Image (cartoon, rainbow, N blue to C red; front, side, top):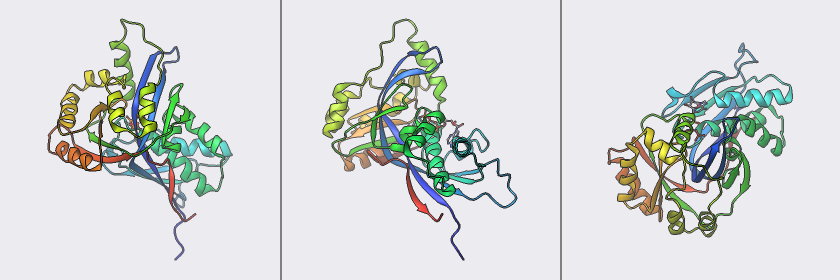
Length: 313
Ligand code: ATP
C-alpha cells in the first residue's frame, strides 16, 4: 500500500526571557521588547489531504493531548486560520485535514496556538507543493499573530513592534529551563488589561531590551541571565494579581534550587532557570510533588523553529 500523503511539522514553545511592555497604543496593541527563546517542548501539526466528500473550502482539524478540550475545532483554531490564509495567498482551496498533537500547555503563555499556526503554514505549504518563499511565510505569520513569526524561526530573537519584527540573537550555550504547568489557562488579553490597570497611575517608559540580559544570553552564562530575570517580565505583576497562587509556585521552584523564576509570558505557566541539566531534573521533580502546579517539565533552550519531521507528500 502506498504511504498516506501527509506532512508532520514539529514546532517549539517559547519562553520570554524578557517581556518589556509599553503603554497601550491607540490600536489596542502594546509596543514590546520581547526576548524570545524557543524551548524543546513541542506541538506536532500534521497536514493530510481532505477526506473524500469533505468541503474543500473548510479545513478540518482534530486535536489530542493535555488541554486539547480547550482548543477550538472550528475557524477560530489558529492552525485552520493559517491554512485558510496560505490557500488564499495562492488562490487555491484550503482543502486539508489537520491534526494537532499538543504538548505545549493551552493558554499557558508559551505561544502554543502560535506554534500550531506556524506548523500548519509549513505543513500545508509542503502538502500542497506551493513552495512559498520564506519571507512570504514570515509575512503571513505576522498577519496571524504577534508570536507566530518567532514560532517559525525558533532559536532566540528580539521581537519589536507587537513582537513580530524579529532580530536573531546570539546565544553562547544551552540554558536549562523548568516549566511549572498550571491547571487552567489565563487569557492573554485579560492579562494585558490588568497590566494597563495596575500601571495606569504613572507614565510607562518605552520598552527596551536589557543589555545585561542580552550579554548573558550571548555568553551562555546562566548565573548572569538569572541575575537579569527579576522584573524582566512586565506582565508578571498582572498575572500574579489575577492568579495569586502563582507566588507559591515561584517560591517552590526557587526553594528547590532554581537560580531564578518568572511567569512565562502572560502565564500561568511559571519558568525556572537552572544551572545545569541535573538541577533542572531535581527542580522538576520537586515541583511535581509540591502541590503548586499540575506538572513540571525540564527543557533546554534554544530549540530550533518549525521543522518538518515526517513527509510522505
Ligand atoms: P501566548 O503565549 O501567545 O499569549 P498562550 O500560550 O497563552 O498564548 P494559546 O495556547 O496560544 O495561549 O491559546 C490561547 C487561546 O487561543 C486558547 O484559549 C484557545 O481558545 C485559542 N486557540 C486557537 N487555536 C489554538 C490552538 N491551535 N492551540 C491552542 N489554543 C488555540
